[in-house]
Image (cartoon, rainbow, N blue to C red; front, side, top):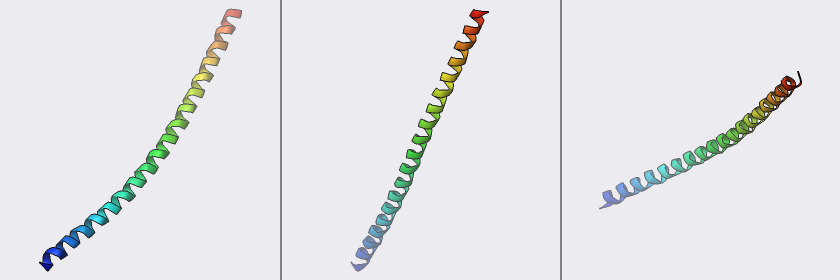
Length: 68
């Protein structure tokens, strides 16, 4: 009977350790996700800025063409 308790105790300790490892892994994944979301937002803002600049240049070129 004692062997059964020792075996169960060992399994419980292993599960607790695995749970802690999973918590740490989950925390790291959440941090990476947050960083990637911020990078995505930065890239979208830069993309939108570049699109606006290109549209502005095209409008100026069209304006120049009309005036000639």
